[in-house]
Amino acid sequence: MFTETLAFIFRIIFQSIMSVFIKYDLERENMSPMLTEGKVLLIKEIQILKRKKKKIKFTDLDKFFYIAIYHNYKKLMDKIIIVKPATIISWHRKLVKRKWNYSQRRVGRPPVEKKVKLLIINMKRANPRWGAKKIKGELKKLGIKLCKRTVSNILKEYGFDLGKKITSYSWFKFLKSQGKRFMACDFFTVETMFLKRLYVFFVIDTKTREVILFNVTSNPCEYWLKNVIRSYFPFMDNLPDVLVSDRDGIYGKWLSPFLKDYYGIKLIKTPPQMPICNPFAERMVRTFRGEVCDHVFIYNEKDLYRVLKEYIEYYNEERTHSSLDFNAPQNKFSYSDQIFHPGKVRKKKILDGLITDFSLFCEQDFALSA
Figure: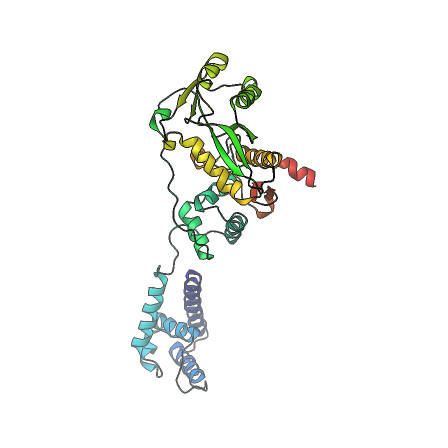
C-alpha cells in the first residue's frame, strides 16, 4: 500500500513538471500557450471518448492528467467537458487521503518466519507429548526467542490440540531458605513385559535437577542399597549435606546413622503419606514414567538399566528445564546471539526415536562433515 502511494505521488510530480516544461516550450516558440493547451486537452478527451465502453472509466493516468491541469492551468477548468471540476478535486482529495492512510500498515511484533514455524511443527510431531512451554525451551537452545503464547498459537494454527494445562507441585519453602546442598531419593516400580516387577532407586540434586545415581533390582533390600550407595558416594566430588526420602520400609532405621557416620549426610524423612513433601523426587518419577517407562516394553533388569541410562544421559546433558531457565542440568546453552539457519539444526534420536532431540552443529561438527 505504501509503495503504491509513493508511485502515485511520483506520477503527479512527473505530470506537473512535464506540464511546466510544455508551457515553457510553447512560450519560447511565441505560440499561444492557452490555445495549444486547449488543443492538448481536447485531444486527451477525444482519446478517452474513443474507448469502446458503455461507461467512461478513467485510468490513473487520466486522473493524473486532470489533476495536473487543476494545479497548473486552472483557466482550462471551464473547458473540460467529460468531467466536472468537483470530480477532479475529489480525485485529489482521495489521493491525499491514501497518502496518509496507515490502516493497512502492520503493527505489533514481526511475523514468525516460515522456517521457524516448520521447525516448531517438526518438534511437535517428533515429540507429541511436548507442550508449548517445552518447545519454547528447545527453541531457546537453538537461539530462537519466542514466547509461550506465540508457540501455542502456531501449534493451534496447524491443528494441534494442546489440551488442558497440567498443574505442577509447589516446592516446599524450607528448602529454598537453606544454604545447604539438598538431594532427594526415591524408589519407583516398573512392570516388565512378562509381568515381573522391577525396582528403580535414584538420587536427584534438588538445585541442578541432575540425576546423580540410579540402579535397578528385582529384590531391593538393605544389603543391596548399601552397595549402591557405596558404589557412588565415595567418588562424588561434592556430597550433599541433606538427603530427603519418604518413609519406605526399605530405609528402616539403619539408613540415617549409615549416611551420618560414613558420609556426614543428614537424612530427613517426609511425613507419612505426604509425597508432596518430596516434590523433586516425585516429579522425577513422573518424568521417568511419562517420557520413557509408559512407552516402551521392558524385558528384564538389563534392558531397563540400558533404557534408563540412555535417557538419563539425555536428561542431564540435553533436556531443557523451565526451572533452570531452559538449560540442561549439566549444560548451559548460549546460542541466543546466533542467527538461526535450518541447515545448522541437528536431530538426534534417543531410545530408537522415542524422543528426538534438536541441537545446533558446532564448528567442530562442520569441520568433520566437510
